[in-house]
Length: 152
Image 1 (cartoon, rainbow, N blue to C red):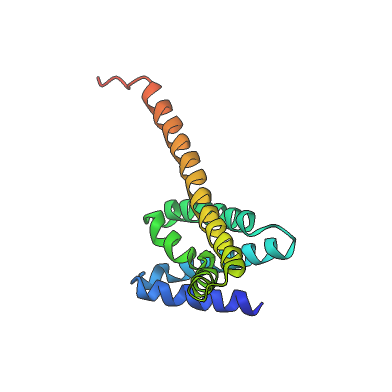
Image 2 (tube, rainbow, N blue to C red):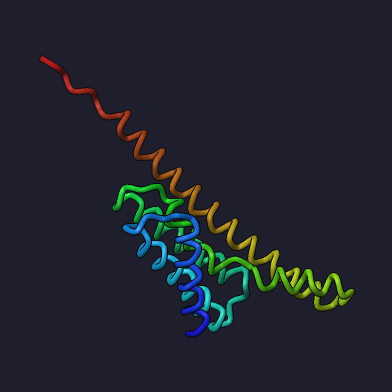
C-alpha cells in the first residue's frame, strides 16, 4: 500500500511539473493510481515485470483514450503523468550502479528488469494505439459509405 501511495504522490508531482491544468489534475492522479495499483497487484499475483507493466500500460492507455473523449482533451495530457509509476527508475539506477562497480551478475539482473519494464510500457502503448487507429478507421469508413443527403 505504501508503494501505491508514493506512486500517487509522484504522479501528482509530475502532473504539477508538467503543468496539467487544475481541472484535469484529478484525472492524471487517478490514472497514476490505476497504473500503480494494477502493476503492484499483478506482481503480487506472480506475473513477471514485463506482463505486469504491459497490462498496467494497456489499462491506462484505455483509460486515457476514453477519458480524453469524455472531457475533450488530448489523451497524452492524461497518459504521460499516469505512466510515471511504471517507469523503471530504481532498476535503471541499480543496473548502472552495478555496472560502475563491475558487479556483472547484479548488473545483468537489473538491466534485464529495466529492459523488460521499458518493453512492457512501449508495447502496451503501441498495442492500444493500433487498436484505437483501427477503430477510428472503421468509424471513418462507415461515415464515408453513408449516402449523402440530398438538398432540395
